[in-house]
Image (cartoon, rainbow, N blue to C red; front, side, top):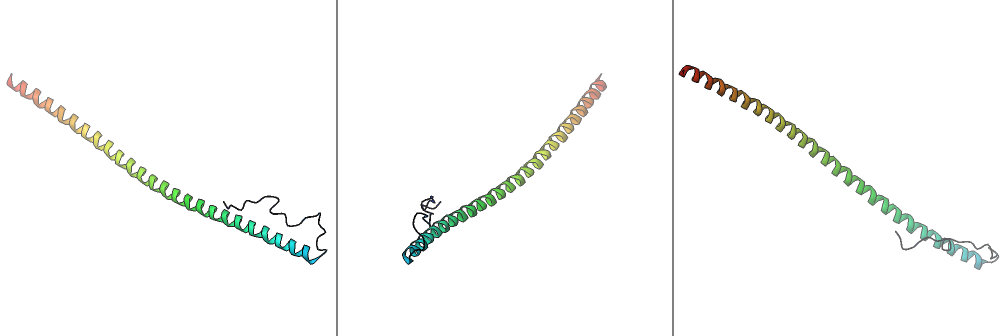
Length: 113
């Protein structure tokens, strides 16, 4: 934020206690005071614009990061699902091989008797 902080005293361009416009000097003082107020307001507005732009840039970076995280999470989920399926298929294959081995063992022991 600008070091030119706005206060009521700084933005007061007209003093009602003075007889405004009674002389050119008062008119000049009013104009100078108004110019000062305009400069303060412009500096503060420009600072606010910079802050808004920085916040918008930050929002865009965060949105991109979240999108990348979502893509990585989706890929991770797909890989995890693949591994679960592989494990289930391998467990089924191991069970079938174990059963086949038992059957083969029981048949060989019955042939030996």
